[in-house]
Image 1 (spheres, rainbow, N blue to C red):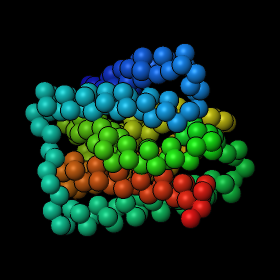
Image 2 (cartoon, rainbow, N blue to C red):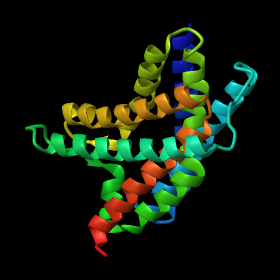
Image 3 (cartoon, rainbow, N blue to C red):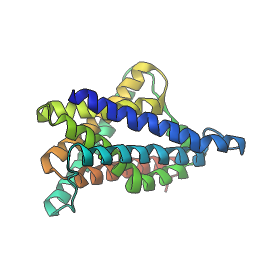
Length: 229
C-alpha cells in the first residue's frame, strides 16, 4: 500500500505538472517562441515544480502529520557540505565512466537549449536554489520517502524513493534507451545521497541544501565549459 501511495504521489505531481506546464507554454508557440528557447524551458519548469511542492507539502501535512524542516545546525551544515562534494564527485566520475563505454551518449533537453543560449544554465541554477530543490525534496523526500518509511526499513525506503525520484528524469534525455537508463542511474545515486541525508538528520532542510548546491555546481561547471572564463 505504501508503495502504491508513493507512486500515486509521483503521478499526481508529475502528470499535474505536465498539464500545468503545457497550459503555460502553449500560448508561447503562437507568439513565435521555439520549443528549445530559454524562456519556454524556464517557464515550463515553474508549474511542474510548483505541483511537486504542492502535492508533497499537502500530503505530508495531511497524512504524515508532520513536515520535519528546521534551520540546520552547524553539524548538519557540515554534513550537507560534505554530502554535496560526494554527490558532485560521484556524478562526475560515473558520467565520465559512461563516456568510456560503447553506450551511445544521450542528449539532454537542457543541453540542447544551452548550446544556443548558455545563460539558461544560470537561470536554472537560480531556480534550483529557490524552487527546484525545495519542491522536489518536499515531494520525493518529505512525502514519498516519509510514506515509504512507514512500511519499509531505511535501506529499502531510500532505494525505493531514489528509484521514484530518478524515474521522471528519464524524460529529460533523448537517445538510445540503454544510454538513457544508464544516465538516469547517476540521478539514482544522487537521490540515494539525498535520501541518506534525510534519514540521518530527520531534517528536510539538509537534502534541500544538498540538492540546491549540487544542481548549482553542475550548472555552473556546464556554463564555464560552454563560455569559458
